Length: 296
Image (cartoon, rainbow, N blue to C red; front, top):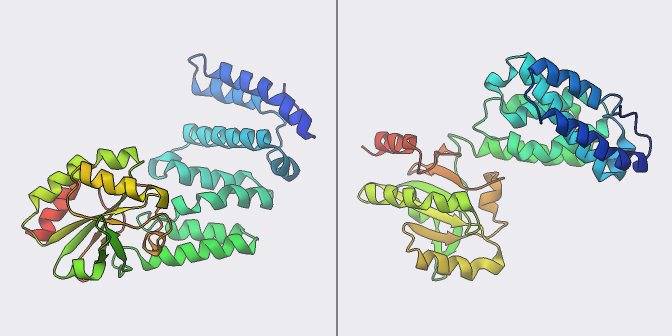
């Protein structure tokens, strides 16, 4: 049985033993109660609140992540908790509940806030309140408060921030000009993003279907500066339609919309009001249903 870890050396030496035991658990088909029993043995006396080890040992942090994942799994099995909670929100709640050390709790939850604080999430206010009530580090609190204010400002019904980005010919394109009399469907993407590339055929079909309707399709690249020429070549080689512009990695527009991952789609009305800050993908039939209602 693995005992309490008091030094970095002991922590590192014990990792293989623990992973072997946990690995064996998944090698067999077991009932949920058997999983819980073996988990209890595998993690016996593991200190989830050792801030010193957290700071000094990558192995400890790795194992703590595993431990939290096991606690989330146990919560799923014994309750209906998963019915209306995403995996990241469940992990957030379990961490707040089970971790008592303030330093560890903040370090684990702060990096997830960009994923958790999204206008489309019904529980965004509750998540924000929980974090602010728990956090003691002023840097973390300031960063999360700024993020929260931004997503409240740029959520459904809010006024979109504007941009002026260059197209493939280095001509500046302004969102305020595109909006005149038009809905605008924005695709935030990059040439290195597989899921983004996968949406291109469906996006082209949307452009063709609504070519005579008051809607413009705008694709905003967030490729790194070193890849700007690669982006230009990609647009030309693939004969991408719509309005293609380049924002780069750190544009104010993308930052305000809190885009932790791509592709990300945004739908605006002709007045620049946000219809959806996290719109459906082109490949989702629900997008066509929504656009048909707006444009017909």
